Length: 137
Image (cartoon, rainbow, N blue to C red; front, top):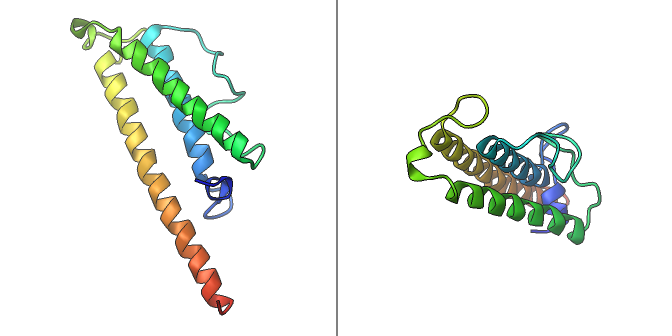
């Protein structure tokens, strides 16, 4: 994926793929925090939930955010693997949600946004093709 595609917006004040990548990383962090009882404030980027991206529209900046997503996924997987099977249906450290519901919820969240990303990729291609057609090319 190019930085231009990741930064493309379907309209004013609409999220782009890049923001969805960081949003998914943030919610993996939130799930990890709730699963482990860790305190807030250790997410590597300032802000929460939907963070404006890109700060820099470069391959390196996009790769850094993709690496963040990978790291948050790895950390969450390690914490999930450490939960004893008998504890999956017990409440997490916060909000009384079971660990099983927390983990399946974050998986569903990822699937939802993965679908959005696929739609945004297709919409961007369609818009680009229509613009070329209007320009006579």
